[in-house]
Amino acid sequence: MLWLIIARDGTDADAPARRQAVRDRHLEGARALAADGRMSVGGAMLDGDGTMIGSMVLLEAEDEAAARALVEADVYSTAGVWQTYEIHPFRRAI
Image 1 (cartoon, one colour):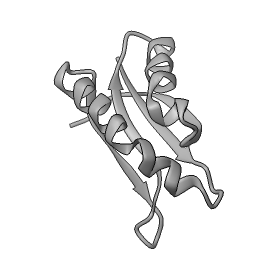
Image 2: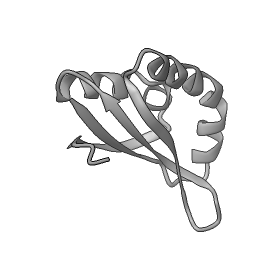
Image 3: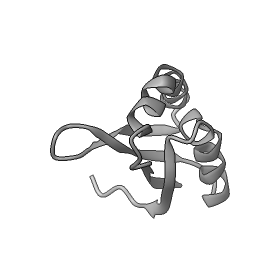
């Protein structure tokens, strides 16, 4: 089943630095998820100035608990980049 993840970064002054500090490790993990077919698409959400403020990910997972486990294991979660996230079941139309 597909799951839409919307994860939001912190809004404090150190938030961009936290993201940058672990970004390479995050991207390594994302590439692995894409390579094994668990991530269809993912990327950064931007504010009006082009600053990264969160992420959107489309994951393939057995259930919500499995999707949640992937999000919580991501370095952006463990390093405090993502402060909140939402998980929604998703049905691809096209």
